[in-house]
Image 1 (cartoon, helix red, strand yellow):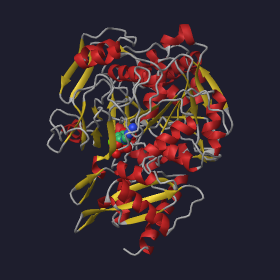
Image 2 (cartoon, protein in one colour; image 1 turned 180 degrees about the vertical axis):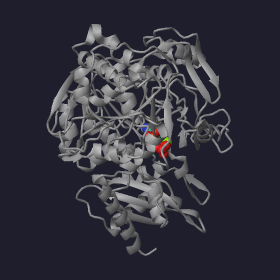
Image 3 (tube, protein in one colour; image 1 turned 90 degrees about the horizontal axis):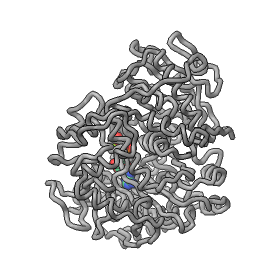
Image 4 (spheres, rainbow, N blue to C red; image 1 turned 180 degrees about the horizontal axis):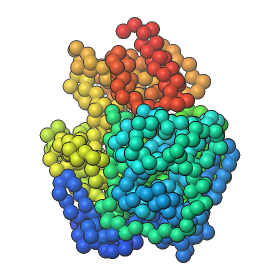
Length: 639
Ligand code: ATP
Ligand code: MG
């Protein structure tokens, strides 16, 4: 653990808020919920039938109303979305235009007989029509279920079957890395046996020739015929807003169901505290809307605040590695929120590229999705933020709805420590416990648990209350178990050390994958790393490390020894890997997370299991090559 601190903030010091939150978390959240616009006030803050929570009972609200209607008097000409397409296209969509489009599309959904509580699957590329479709569902009380537009027919089929959607919204294609991704054909294949899917709405994105069937209706035709006004439904606070399947890093994705009033309260508050959002900001979150970060911090939170944001289509390194910096410079972005995976990739390309852009508009940086290696944190701070932007390392999950651990520069100024998420947000009680559920002492590793309900928490897993209970609430009594390994230091700062399932048990010691990977990545020639354990008769488990080198660096025995020595010095001899494999890329989920379980399976010569969330389409061949490369390097090395 690095105990380096960085004193950098935005000068905010609201000490009262934390005090209020810790003295009474219910009245604290009650206060926060008043920042939203409700049709009817609630009469009970929380109805808690463990493990099922209903927030703001009796209150009625609408997400689309809070995202759009409330801004029409003051912000109708303000850009909501600054959209950058892959083919040098761009569009500016104002709050006024979003409002009109969403109301029209709500009427389209009604004309297709979509009713309150019905599910609508959305399989669209990163175009403004994606949030328009989501807000339209929310407006009439339909439950949207967005599927990442890179998934195969098989993955979509499972998800549509699970949610039983009546309508599927897709496009005639999407652009990614210069190619057209055939979305409509994939949908046709996925729904061919599903009579319950009544209509397919097709957005004309690429004007590609596509097969047309009797279920298909074109977006533009439907919109031409739609009326311009549609009132937002008054929905119960706990009315389901959406189903979203998790990234599937650890196995089969889970259908997480989120509600409305609690979820929006969580998002409104965390967006303000973490990003210090102001009307003048230009916010850029690089997440695809197909993941929870896109749902929470591209679609809902920025709109609740009437913020201007950048949305982009394509990939961060296409047509080349200048893309992100180009966009940041073009729009004078003030806040940038991305993933450690993306940062490691940018870092791999070297400093010259970002240094040749004017990034001086930036005032705050953030990351999400995986533990950030301190080395990468420092690069982000120095090379991108020019040592003047605080970095927020936000820990949360699809299930938590919004951030639960993060520094909050919009609220308070605290020293930052590279690699630590810092403190839990106000109003949640987070602890680190041992196998038996007892709190571990300071600087001792254990399992992260959440000890009270929070407003953004999932309602349940779609159609499977039992699984919801077993997965999250059975390991510890009355505590939510996120499945992450962590440590709390002497300042109460949280360090996320990787997935609990991935913890390495070497000769009686427990080592988190994040600790080891950070150590390897701190070698100046290393860009990325993933470690996993394989069974060993003597030690219980031995460590295998996969290493991706920075551009232009060639692997060698000397390098291998340097990395081994570094681990021995920084962590201890016990953690010395049995094998180090140099590879050109690591298998990742489509949300950019390293899939250690795949590496483990490959290292153990086992079946690789469910890979539905692994990168496919154009990327699948690359990933397959990575597997082969790993396999070859395993076969070619003496064991
Ligand atoms: P599945 O649950 O299907 O295996 P997943 O856990 O990858 O998929 P998400 O909900 O997208 O799906 O990811 C949440 C997880 O990502 C967290 O449980 C944690 O392991 C990791 N994570 C997210 N943010 C951070 C962070 N800032 N630091 C460390 N880990 C993080
Ligand atoms: Mg998970």
